[in-house]
Image (cartoon, rainbow, N blue to C red; front, side):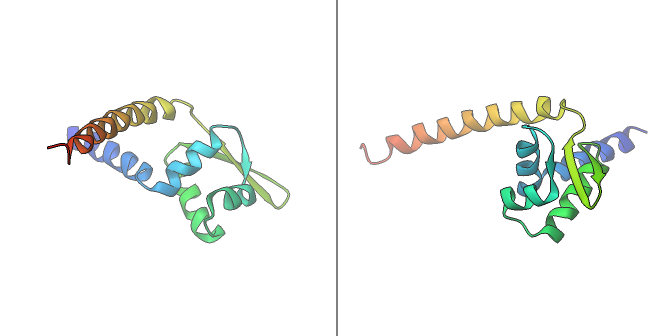
Length: 108
């Protein structure tokens, strides 16, 4: 049973591990967007973007709705930002440490 839990967690994190998917989540932080709008804001072709949107929807991160011929996406559970925010904090620390190390180069 424990192995299944790890597999589920790993699959969820794998879903988040693509730059386009993270960009979509950040864009949708501001509210619902149409697929067309997301195509423009991400610069990704619609066919490729649709695959990413479906993966995020299937993982429970996004929800979608259709209005006539247009499909709109929004964040389903804003708790996703409780996962992404600490990652951003950790990365900022890492980059600050790297900057400090690089700033000492050439001072000898």
